[in-house]
Image (cartoon, rainbow, N blue to C red):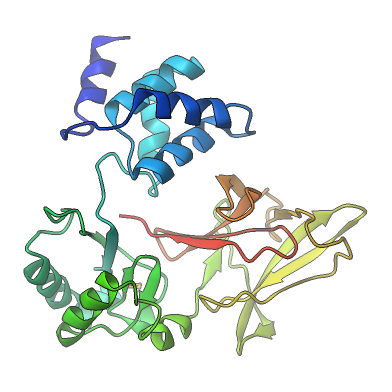
Length: 297
Ligand code: FES
């Protein structure tokens, strides 16, 4: 390994590395045959340990034969990977222009004051991490804060304390679900960036997201709701439940899977751009409701 690579890896996580080497070896072995094996391996380590340590990246490099710079490049390209331990609850506050003019900086300041950390930091008890983002694709509802994957709109300083209390009790998405689930996501193709919104076929009172699909014996369309939290989906495929559709952009025809797997059924997720930095990932297996929001930092 080149000295430059080693130094790069050693600078990744200046915290005590408590990952068991056997655990990393097992996760590599379990995911080595996946179509996008490197991403699948890193995803498995991230899911099990909460972050990617320098030692874990070195072991992945050694076991897969990929140069450490490649492994590091993938680990830092995808925002859902973290090179540092994150808190149990992740708070992402938008500081994009629309949220900024509605007072987002005061909201971030209040979160920092309540948690006793600065943006980018994690509380000493590892309960909370605070990140700031540039746009979450919900500008009309700003200031927007995402806590543990749940969007909360129109956040003022006075909402900060109850929101953090709800997160500690695992209730974000409970009391605040009215605001979170009323959120409309505006999705675009992550390749050509063309809008995927279809106002002519509304779901849940909002424009649906229209995608092209290929299933066994059929090609056609797959539509999903743009309302965050809704699982409404439709397709012209007559394939049975459990079938995994291949999903493409209706404009450029690119395959929209990006190597991530459904946390529920392990099918390759369809990845859509939302705003400047967020990604909506949806499971294309018929009958599976798996979906996740990846909020960038
Ligand atoms: S600027 Fe905050 S959601 Fe777009």
